[in-house]
Length: 175
Image 1 (tube, rainbow, N blue to C red):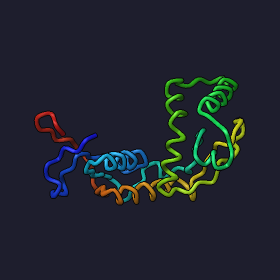
Image 2 (image 1 turned 180 degrees about the horizontal axis):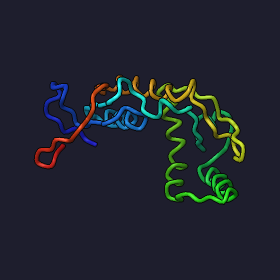
Image 3 (image 1 turned 180 degrees about the vertical axis):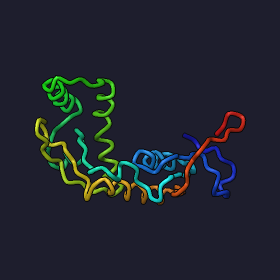
């Protein structure tokens, strides 16, 4: 990403407009701002959160800093072997490409969330898995939203709630 807007004085002009205020949207907004872009978040609801705020806040990841500090040696490959054993044992199937992407990036996600202040219990044992790689955000999914929103604000992201995006306006191929 590279900043392109010419008038940063106008609060309605930004390099990046993120539609939605859930966990993925706020993480995207934070990354764009970290890369030097001006960012506006538009959320139709009265508050930020989306389904992330409704979640219990648990996730699994192999190779995290939390595991290293706890003396646990783990890897995405070991995590994949556990998932494969469980999936095949249940007679199920999944998308192997998506699984690989998820497992290879989960540790970076936990590390990032911890770096912005999300407190986790874990790593904990999850039945069926061979390593402690289960994490619970405290007190739950709202923790992700609170920390991501604070991180966005610190990076200068402008967030508008109760603001529904209904269409995209384009000029000469640019939104």
